[in-house]
Length: 208
Image (cartoon, rainbow, N blue to C red; front, side):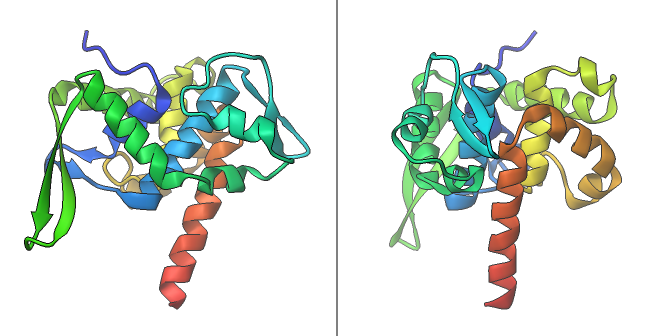
C-alpha cells in the first residue's frame, strides 16, 4: 500500500498536481485558498476548531502546524471566508516546503523568458498522487457517505469548491453534484467558504 502525507493541506497540494502534464494545475492565491480551507477543515474534523454563530472558534487544544488556530484565537470573531483568504500565499510556501522536507516533491527554480521566477514542482512518486486521487474517486462514487474516510470526503469537498480540475473536471462536478453536497456537509464549513471565495474571484474576473 502506498503511503500518503498525513496532513490534509499536504494532500490537497499533491492533488493539485497534474500527473499527465507534470505540473501544478493551480497556483498563487487560488491554491492558497484551498490549502487554507484544508487547514481549517483538518482542525475542524479533529475538534481543535469549533463554530459559533457561523464563525470558527478554538476547540480542543492540540497541534496547530500552520498557525491558523493561533490566528483565530488572537482575533475577534470573523467569518470562515476571512480565514480562507488570510495568508493564502504564505501557506502555499509552507506546505510546499513541508513536502520537500519530507521527501514527497522536488522543487527547481528557473526563470521564464530569463526574467520571471518560476518554481518547477516534480512529484517524486506518482503513485502517491494516484493513491490520493483513488481515495477521492472512491469517496465520490463508492460506499455510503457515512462510511467514507473523513479526509477523502474532505478532499472531494475541497477539490469541488476550489475547482481543482486535476481531481474534478467541471463535468464531474455537475454530474455528482448531490454526492459532493453530501460529502461537503460531512466536512464542515470551510469548503463552502472557499467555494464562495472562488466564485467571487471568478465573478470579478468575468466583469473586469
